[in-house]
Length: 271
Image (cartoon, rainbow, N blue to C red; front, side, top):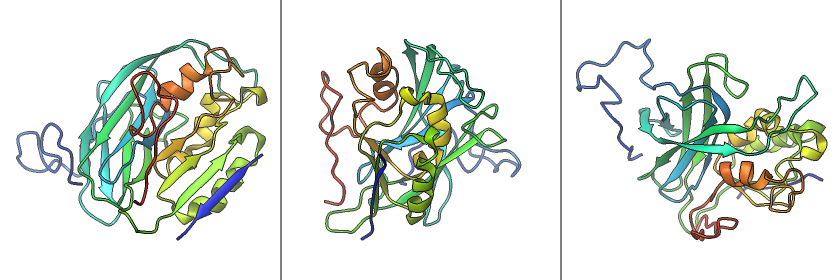
């Protein structure tokens, strides 16, 4: 069952070198040269989480260890693009999931890198576009190897805001995309997911899910809840929670998370 609710109502972080010029502060580079360095090819993402009134984080997954982790971010209200560096963390997927359907890529086990760029010093109630470059295109990027997204910071207390809420996303059944097309045009400032992000029981892999949920993940900061298909019950595979829900969506908000329990968090937005 699909459930949807839509309610209507930087200071940049530095990186090595000069984002508007050469590494030694000299003349700007040729316009044809993109100053954003390239990650290894993306396998999932990007998406944003951990948004507050002044901070957020952008994530994506790669199979290979990247030589570079960085995003370029630009205020939607106008302003210069800023390049912000990040970190890559090696992770392990324990359980693979095969696919016998040519349109559904399998989920592979083994080593993957979760890449994260932390943003701080952002103005409250502001939205930004960001982009990630890769050394080669993939199913989650455009033909040049670039992927783009949007994030917003929380509104201050008392200010109205827009949010998007959905549950039981199962794009392989053909119903989810129409819901997204109908609602995301309102440009919500954050995305709430009520759980059951993905279903192996409908032969849908996580690789397929990330390809077909791009429009949702691109739209704003993502705050998912843990449903029974995402949790500890080994509903679909014995390690589904560790391999995907916790590995990729660990602590969507840092508020309320403790060192021994990351399965819940507290979200505050707009006061």
